[in-house]
Length: 355
Image 1 (cartoon, rainbow, N blue to C red):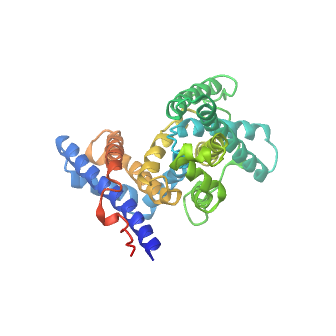
Image 2 (cartoon, one colour; image 1 turned 135 degrees about the vertical axis):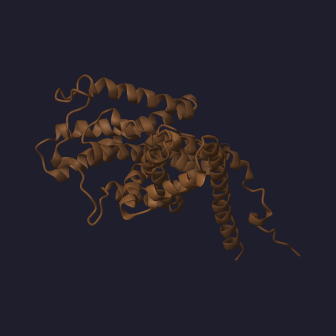
Image 3 (cartoon, rainbow, N blue to C red; image 1 turned 45 degrees about the vertical axis):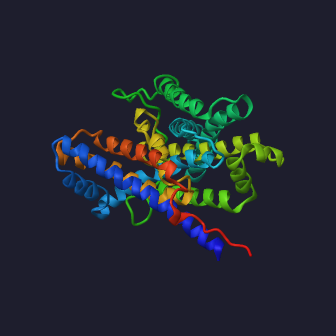
């Protein structure tokens, strides 16, 4: 019974502290809006209408939540080993580029084989991209946060080189873009919804990641490394191997997000792929406390906030970046709230007396 009590206390703390951080964030954002000369309650109402006010807006929200779920796993999974990886943006871009390349190679084949090949290519490319940061950490002691961040810029530069050179579609005059993958390789919509299948991919990936980290020997070993690296090494765990494999899986999730954006939205690679899903995924992972299942509702919430940006801009004559200010405040408050874990007696497990 004490075990269940401890679990409920831990779950209560994991929900309450982020909720309080979000509440404080909304209050601070309200102050920012007031200083900008607008009524914060009107803006909050517009955010709700633009995100969840109708079935149409709900579908827009879910469409934006799909890549956020996958990108968030790129940060959430390595965090279980105590690693702060912020390379989701780069892995997403590389995954999209690899998916286009695979579609061009497999052009003329069956749609099923084309889509499966694109998924595999995107996941492998994204996995290798973030796996490189993990290998640098494991074998050279390079800080994974810095290396994964720098890899983002390398990925953007590589994409720009390819879409303005070897992969450029000469018919795209206004914006340098790759060749189109072909309508036969585009991912369709979920029946009865105006949302592509990427949402299902995201939910499945988050569920699979949760099972991997909580119900497998691999996940147990990864959590041991995250708890105490030195003790894990003494116990004989292959820390370097666990680090690289986890980073590969994390990058594969972000690479799949890039493939989904190409195959379900854009049809080609261009600067439209660089919209910050990878960076927003970091915020999703932190709010979710690196819990893959919690990533699903948090990604939906952040997806809704992003979906409402256009309505906020039109209705209140605010810059489109206003929503980014809100996300920045939320991220700051989430970081500030980290030292609060374990400090409230309400959530602490009661000592068991002996005697």
